[in-house]
Image 1 (cartoon, rainbow, N blue to C red):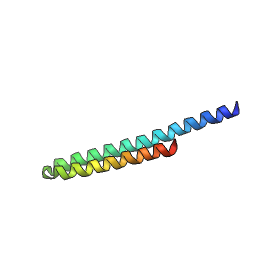
Image 2: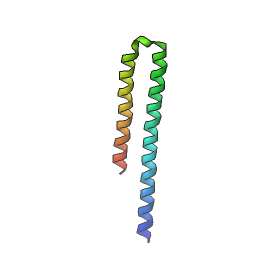
Image 3: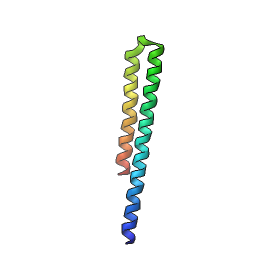
Image 4: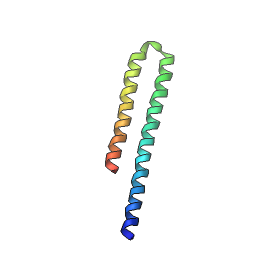
Length: 73
């Protein structure tokens, strides 16, 4: 009985940590998109370079979320 309770608590804690990691990545991707849209509205001529670096930043945020997910699991 005690071992089952401990296993259930560890599973819940793992899910919470995974959720926080994914939420952080989502916030980072949203901030990157918002910043890129503001930058492109101010300087449309730099759209290609801004999009490139926005996608790099989004990939890094998502990559760290996946690394955190593997570390928790």
